[in-house]
Length: 236
Length: 293
Ligand SMILES: Nc1ncnc2c1ncn2[C@@H]1O[C@H](COP(=O)(O)OP(=O)(O)O)[C@@H](O)[C@H]1O
Ligand SMILES: [Mg+2]
Image (cartoon, rainbow over all chains, first blue to last red; front, side, top):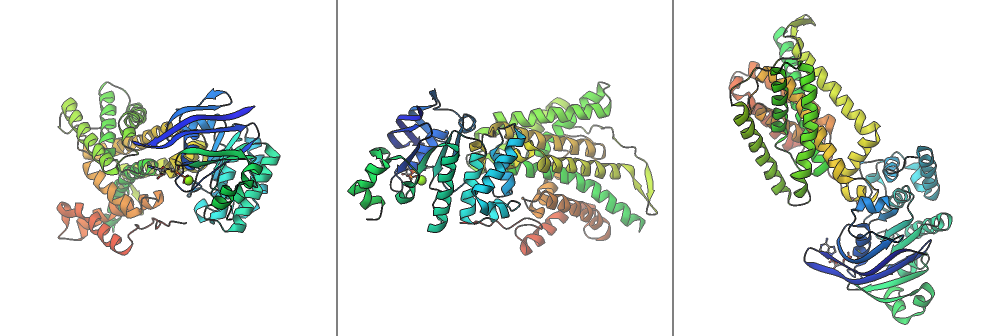
């Protein structure tokens, strides 16, 4: 079953149109990558899904048309957006950030268990649980951003360049944890990455964007085998 | 010595009024990033509501409670139908809009109730009590205590409740908050409503002293802004302490520094402000903005 479907999605910032008919299909429990150079429209595609940019075309989630909904309404349907730049709440502690993530939930006992799960997934956060998010390292902030997203018990996670600005080993740690999350929870994912090597450790298939359009779509195995992908995104 | 203690207690009392308005300004600023110059005007409007009700025979305490409820609704309506369209835009425009709102409220209040000074009944008796061997007015003590209690409640709301956590989250990063499902628009309305309620309390406490006029809180707003800058925009406790310092210094300077007197005492907070900002640009308690990459 398809969980998320984008068909001919356009998006614009004021008068400037930056998406020109993007398509994307994410099956239940699936993970789909969006690759592409800087400015290709990867972030904007995620913003179109989460309702933070003016959008045209068709976006359906679980069979329901979600285009034009407010971001909090999209979140309430079970879509958690981990934005580029992490979006952690700097003046709140790690625990408070996680609690904000669970804002829509009423099951306070399960919330505590899920906080423990986050800390198990990202042990670095355990020691920093009382620190303000602004005092965390970049890697820890990224872990917290993912943690806050999964505290809402989403069905779909939107991840925007989770490796950006991190040392390679830290980026690998973050992706290892997200892969474990995927295996254990079955949360579907849309994974935006410039680092295609990392993305292919997580996703089953991917699409490549260029100036706001899909130029290539395929399974991870197909794409990894293509010369142009290797040259442009895999460093040889 | 007796005069000194009396002046300090009175200073704390007026300082508490500035503190309440300053906290309202901080609350709105934290939530929306703008300074609401109409905060004092909105408070005056609330006092007029209470005044009209007492004239109709409603007991004072009920009239004030009703004016607080009115303020919550009025603050929320102002956010939803006026400020909402300016919040994400140019901050300068938004500030001009709040100044326009202040002018509008003052004009409407003057038109409805005239610019004459109206007597507003005091919540506290005008008697004095002996305290540390000197007599201080019950009203000054009462005002200070009420504001301290209100601040305590506010603190408890922000630190101890889910609503408070949500308000703080929206203030820090509305987009991130929305990604976690927080209804940002509704929470902003709550923030404006709470700020307006805070102003209403301050207005009701200070009205008996100043007598009620449409411009009653114009001076207090200026002092509150001084407290906001002095205390640091990010520190509620700092803002309250700064407001108290301003209230006390203003009173002491008027009496003890001959050339200042009562005419020039309005300048005191600004001399203080100038000195502090030269030494500590982030205010007495504010944090330097640190950007992490
Ligand atoms: N807030 C904005 N206002 C105007 N243009 C924007 C804005 N954000 C992005 N853009 C433009 O939209 C295009 C796509 O950007 P983006 O989706 O961020 O690309 P990517 O995430 O692939 O690097 C770029 O040309 C960028 O300059
Ligand atoms: Mg991007």
